[in-house]
Image 1 (cartoon, one colour):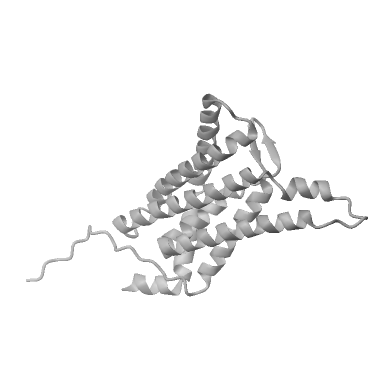
Image 2 (image 1 turned 60 degrees about the horizontal axis):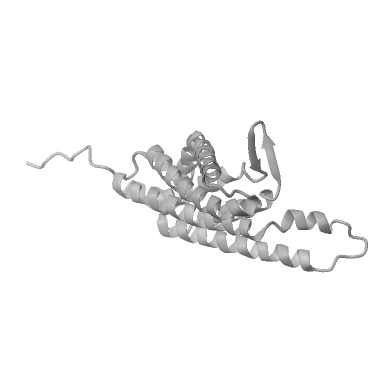
Length: 232
């Protein structure tokens, strides 16, 4: 007599290889979002009591795309997307430097504004890139490790835990490099800077998690290889 299959066993984790072209599109979106975020960070913004920068609304999108790539394609593909985005951001920063350095025409009167917009303090750029690289990698690693344990179940839990982990590392790295540059010189102010930044970014990511889950579901349905793996 054959034993009945166990219904409570978790479904094995599935990943697509990224050969359909959807992965390349997501990688491009991640790179563009990071580059635009770095440009936006050159503008200070005040919304009520909140002091932030012009790139703050783009940051959640970067982590949504990161979660999407990690969930559908696995850690290696996520690591590749993060690395490519990181290198393209460095290339963009170099291009800004060249554009600023080139001698302007006699009739061009926007040099000062160009320098303010595209020539941010190098340590702030370093802070942004280092935080993105380390935070996104840790976010991807945590999400994929959890998926390997739970299979296709508990997607919201994977997104929430990986987001908190990635955001914490991201915030600590960014604030540690940027704080001295913007004039923070005591421990209490630094702690406030880190905690407020971490709570704000994490709250936004958690609130947007239904959007992330919906987009992940759409990509899984659109990815031919993922559908084929699911049918097995």
